Image (cartoon, rainbow, N blue to C red; front, side, top):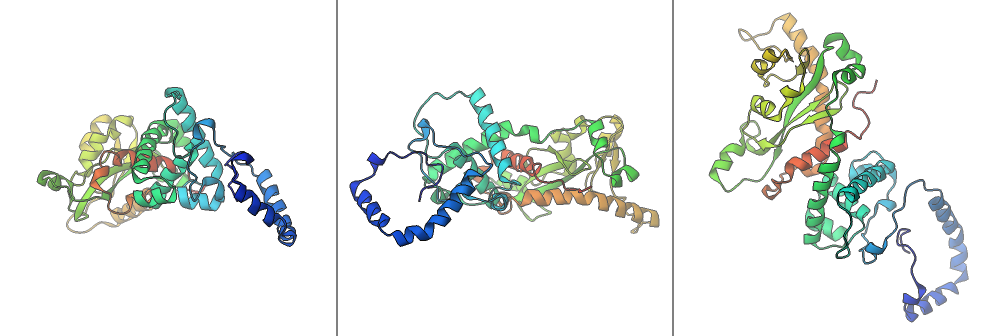
Length: 360
């Protein structure tokens, strides 16, 4: 009846009443014969399981067993609950974070933790992917609401620190070697495709903050973030979150995107990115759809707009992957303002572990 990660249980700890009930059940030979084949099948499957099983260590003797653990899920269910492509990716990511954590912060003892480390990691990913409330997650994992909140904040800081390698700015040669043919024919110097997205949040009490965070485009209080992807669809640039009233030009300048580009590179964006005055002095080209003159576009401008739109669609697909993590789909509490930038960065890092956007 127990999960396979519970480890060895001393029979002397089992009550005599339970032993008597077990003996009575063992006399039901008919039931045992019917279930023997099923037990053998389950045992064989567990022996052939290629994934790592994390047993309870001495420091985790008093851990609480959740209703749902990562060992209970199939690969398809792992994608649904965590947003990761499969179970081996989950284990590799967890082992990397824990190895870096132990190197920087050696274990010094203390109170026994409520959950195993792998269960805590699974709980955080589950909340990011499904957007569950803290009280709901605490009930699922048999911990208090305050403990769940502390675990979430702790792992957000850990993941933000140790997953920054997943959102890296590649050099020019790497971008050109992995550039799809659709970009090579039209815009071979394109280094990054940029776009902004907004996340709804609660209304702050301060009147000055209300004016800063109100977005005319969304007609709501929002946070705004700039996302940049390479031509092959990998997220390479994520800015901090700013108040919703900031312009695309200002957030591009504040995020340091222009400083990352080199002379001869090209940035592809929407009409709202009026950053030619910052790009031209540094020898950076700007690829944006042409604006209307005299209320209409010429035939050549219409064709150029269509070509840019066909290539810019990939950044919209990347945005869709990010929004699939439901924690940023709804209205985020204003109390999460200190963690929201880290949460969006972690979500972008996890999206880079998914299969490529452009299959070529």
